[in-house]
Image 1: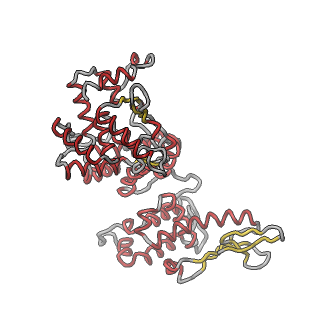
Image 2: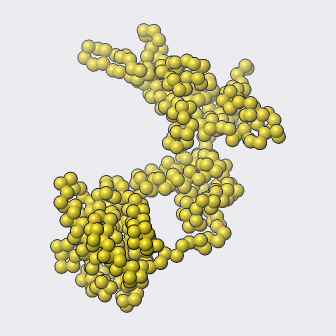
Image 3: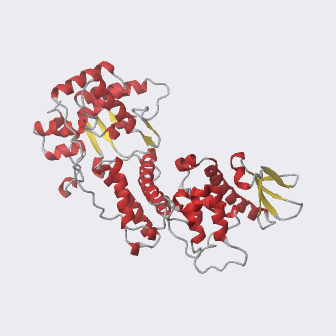
Length: 473
């Protein structure tokens, strides 16, 4: 709904959801309520609320805030499943404020020490609303908890829980929630805008939100942390559980630091996992006969997936490093053909460690694969900057998709029960067996930490690295 509020003959200003109910009168926020949620407003089709001003600029700002809150609230009321799948915690908070406003309540109305006017009982208002929403079973849980198999909190949607929390919170000392810590963690992190990193971080924090809730940082305790650990171990290996606990710990530490709460301590520090790493699957190396089968199949099919496989096989690079190669990273017109494995943050490409940045000579099947991959991309009239555009684009390197295709091909077609990461383990073994010195092994594969001595000078020449790799080709 829009309305022309200013027409000078030269310009017109249109503002959504803002209008005076009578000429020259105070401005109101007026918005049509979606049919799916009109039942929550007594069947009303329009929502009206005074903006408390006649000033267009001030009214517009207030209306925009109310619109954001209602977008979140109505999305939630229209589909709880959709809310749980897509609404973020900040949206929950906006929706909770809108819910309180629709009930005539305000954050802090039930905070300690607040004296409400006679006849105004926020506790009864929110109770009546929740009973109407959840029915007799909720009423039993509320007033006769011994008879109820569920707690009243278990009935609440995330938005209702946030609304109750806001009612009880002292507004002069607003709490810092875990979601606040997550927000600043992603805002400040070098990889915070990269889709995979953001998704992985939110997934880790999601385990806390689903197990305990989005609480103020000072309300989490050791038992909460152990509950999250136990839930993680139900569906994941110990290595995955540890990685996600480490992410949770990092986000929590960021919140403590940024919101001046370091005195609280982090309940996710030093969480132990019984039998950690004992369930890890040993990644075996490819045998010589398996490598021959793979090489023959790659040459026969000669497509992008097989080019990736061949590059992995004879460079030992990580799958993400190969998938994330740009055309400029493949240098064939050089006395020592090679690839450049380097970060490119603007395009979403990062490396696992600082020592992962390196130049790797191309020998054997890797040289064949790089040549064929370049030829295929350059023959495409819509070519972009990526060597493997099916799995790489600006701001996203999708190594997981390539991994799934490669692993399925190895297992189902070639009957080899190993994964793409086994190429990296195989390269380490091949270099060892060929008598390549440890220092050269680490430089080729980007393994380990470089010593102070290794960091001096310009390092080894590509030609020297090529000589070492030639021992295994």
